[in-house]
Amino acid sequence: MNLENQLSFNPDYVNNFCILGHNFNKMNYLFLILSLLSFQANSQKSVYLFSYFTDNGQDGLHLAYSNDGLKWETLNGGKPIVAPTAGQDKLMRDPFIIQGKDGLFHMVWTCSWKDRQIGYASSTDLINWSEQKTIPVMVNEPTAKNCWAPEMVYDPQNKNYIIFWATTIPGRHSDVADSEHEKGWNHRIYCTTTTDFKNFSPTRLFFNPNFSAIDATILAKGDSFYLFLKNENPNPPEKNIRMTQSKTASGPYPIDVSAPITGKYWAEGPSSLLTDDYVYVYFDKYMEHHYGAVRSKNMKNWEDISDRAIFPDGTRHGTAFKVTDKIFNKLINLK
Image (cartoon, rainbow, N blue to C red):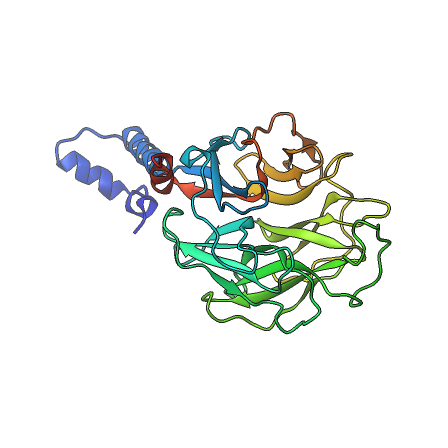
């Protein structure tokens, strides 16, 4: 029974207090209820974390924390929490972390520039991680060139996790005007589902817009799911963050996406965070070598606050998420 049910206003409770010799009136009792509820809320306070990589992702998972969603500070003295051991290139790029219904933190990441699999590991405390393994998500597509920036969302309707990522399969999708530097890359978003991170559904196409798309992320808010992603078209260059929404986690998501929510700079690797007041979307301003952010109260009007967002030097594509004080207190004490 939760605290609200235990302390729901009931005259019998007041009478019992009076019988015990306490001179409680209704206002005293209401004050007691509010005080206890406030104590319960404070004891379950959340802290924001950000998982990220640096350089090429060769040294592993980094974590930062924030109390306001604007100023982020390193954990573990800026050193990696865990080193990569899985995959062809043994990289840990684009680390995405979600806390599952089982209480475990599940992480997926890009383990190679040109591979048909992604990395996976789990943890109870974000410090001690399971043995790393690869999930061969595109093994049945022999010409697939890559599996980049995998992420996840819990699907409450189907009670499973949707894992999605960007892949180029030559000749598979409508052509986009390319550039010499990006010749032959034309990405779309693919997905698989799982309930236990051991068994996975056959891979399928998840989002197929009329542009090259990478770095998808999904935010559950209210009764909708918001898909943010990068328009990767190179010629003329787009390199901005767009948004679309669906009533279900599994879609379909309309391919008629929003106008850019980012400014006149190149941006990639969006990650969303729902706070009490705003939805923040963080991203890598990779040509300027620092992180940026926009925020909104209504999911329509976006305020660029890149000049107020402070991230550790060298932060690259990561994930913003919430943890309890209990989890955070262990992390903050790492040396």
